[in-house]
Image (cartoon, rainbow, N blue to C red; front, top):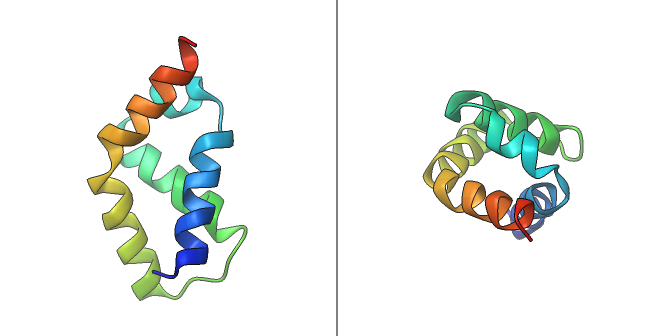
Length: 72
């Protein structure tokens, strides 16, 4: 995964509504985030799989960020 795609992912996490990030189940959240990135960048199937795995491994952090924003 390129640094550009990683920056795009975290930008999406920061700009998405906290409610959206918190309401989706894990699989739906991964799919939603991948879809958001795919609208900004062309990804081959290997990059998409890697991105999905990366997001899956960071779900707790993503939800913590969203929860923090919701209560701030």
